[in-house]
Image 1 (cartoon, rainbow, N blue to C red):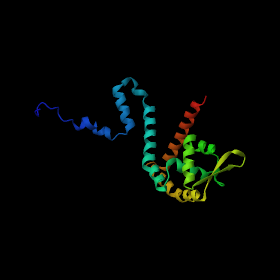
Image 2: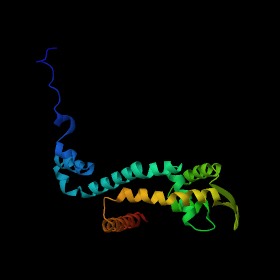
Image 3: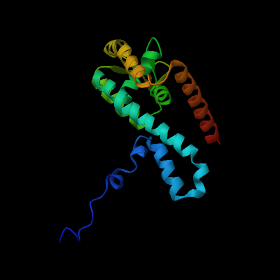
Image 4: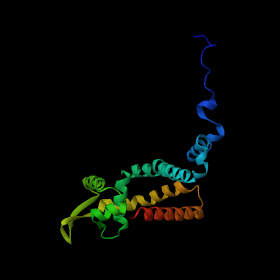
Length: 191
């Protein structure tokens, strides 16, 4: 095949899109693409952009800030959440698996696996529930309490680093809006 009959090399624009578009976040880029592809929905895309940004923000915060912080502590996200929940429950740092499940928002099957791992590591203990012989309580061990109380200040600093692109006032405002959104979405889900 001669040089004249080959397909031309793709331009940078074809490979990467409009250079100005690359500076736009993914949700806005998706909006522009939908507006071009389906103009009939162009005025109804704001929720898509909002939810896209929420999803991407959660992924970025988890991947770039929280997961490395948990790894530094030697735990996975759910494991840290269980231990932190027990600590913030206050003395005697004891909850039922159901209370942990409801507080940490993970599946009961996922909870059992996490509790097994934490118990094996000596960070929690399972003890008979004082009010129900069929049930168990999950108790934070002294090792688990020391681990979390020692690491929480560094973890909080990581969280500050994750959101320092917003002023304290903006953080408070966004937090309030997200609380309102979550409450509204939860109410709509109720029967």
